[in-house]
Amino acid sequence: MSTPIVAAPDGFALPEEQRRFIKWTIYLGFIVLAFGVLNGLDQALNYAHIDIFRFFPGMRTYYQGLTAHGVFNAIIMTFAFANGFVALLVARGLGTKLNSGILAASFFTILIGTLLTAGAIVSGSASVLYTFYAPLEASWPFYLGLALVVISTWITSLNLFLMLAKFRREHPGERIPLLAYMGVVTYIFWDIASAGIAIEVVAFLLPWSLGLWHGADPMVDRTLFWFTGHPIVYFWLLPVYMSWYGTIPRQVNGALFSDSVVRIVFLLFLIIIPVGFHHQFVDPGVPLGLKFAVAVLTFALFVPSLMTAFSVMYALEIGGRRAGGSGLIGWFFRIPWKDPSVCAQVLAMLAFMLGGITGLMNASYNMNLEIHNTTFVPGHFHLTVGTAVALSIMGIAYWLVPYLEQKELWSAKVALVSSWLYFIGVLIFARGMISGGLAGMPRRTAISLIPYAEPPGWKLAGILVGVGGSMMFAGALLFFVVIGMTVVAGKRTRIADIPYSVTIPKPKSAGWEPKLDRLGYWIAIALVLCVVVYGPFLASQFPLQLNIPGFRAF
Image: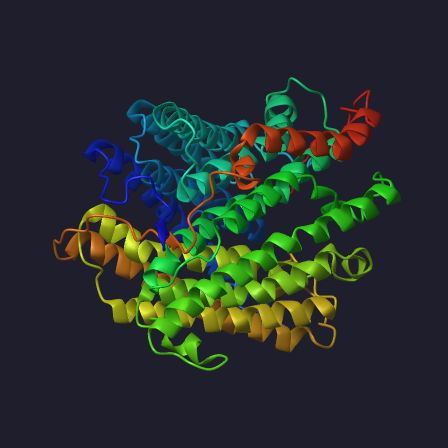
């Protein structure tokens, strides 16, 4: 017998005020995404030796545009979407209203942070890229803005934790509904993981930009950044996992085969936070033994990814076979491909498999030495965050925006074209990036302006990047057309609920499974592992060497 993954399957409606703040938060992310995508076009064409930087108003350098592309898409958009989407799903899962004041505080905090960060980038005073490595120095509004964006996620966490506490008071002894469980664990994970970047920005970079510190300690700053910098990938991904587990099975008329497997997947991500050192394989200040140990730990992250691949594909297979599919793969072609939300997210899953394989190469110590700081790296992460996350968010929006607006989606056909165009484009784009990286083509480089002859292999790779990136841009543009027209011209309708999934067995209330809900134990394990991996190294860096002066490239 199937069991809903929410506490109130008969229906639950948020107050209009709360729905409005969720909508504004998500729309803020989409607005920022539009500017980030626009700056992505010039990055792709750059590799094809087409220079369009000078045509962008307010953008004066390649690195200014690259900073906007990375910060807008990978930080602000993803955080805004997570704050709104996860809050909505946790509220629906628990059948509990959010705190309106906290919801408003989260929205206005990320709004102010976005304006400060964007203003610094557009003014040209913060061309420090997505990683903002010291001693590259930005103006103080950039750091303050980023701090506020992160704080908005902590405010959202407070809202989720208060709802969970209320649910436990009102339902003593009951299991946490799966939809809410995924969201709460996601934000617990992020609260721990964000400590690195929070300390880096608030304790070091922001005071440094205000003249309170005479210099920076690049080794410590890089380490703190990457404590957060790899887990942030899973903060982008876990809200998407909530959709893959929590709504896609319902959308394809399938079901989840195990409640416990999903909970274990999210707990594994919570525990395996401290893997950021694999981004520092070429840093001379990190001991070789620590690099090797973290490389092994990083490979452990492949386990929850494989569990997800099996669980979600099984849910899709159930739906495909119910629709008449048969044979080994015949069911795959019977899932509702004409549903733009399903189509976009399944295509995102396919791209994610390729992203996972290339991610294993990045995490391999010897291979990393070959491909580090080449275009192989953005080729990899445009398959993960650039497609598994971004294209999934587009697919989610195709049911989420109509639900929030109570309007029908404008032109499902255009939405389908958008998804296929983006998917095919990213395959071409990533092929060019990866082949160029294997030929030594550097990332973060204004290739269109280089004064020297290109080595063999770069030219074709650059053309593929330009063609694929242009297709991705066109697909994203169609997405914004569909969403914009839905908001302003969609037909009024009534959508009573979100498409939540069901599990085939009921969550067990006895045995070992309820221990998965004892979140305090799992938090303690995660914290201990973080201290074991990072504590000795950070302790060895004292006293800090805050004596490297800052510089600005432009």
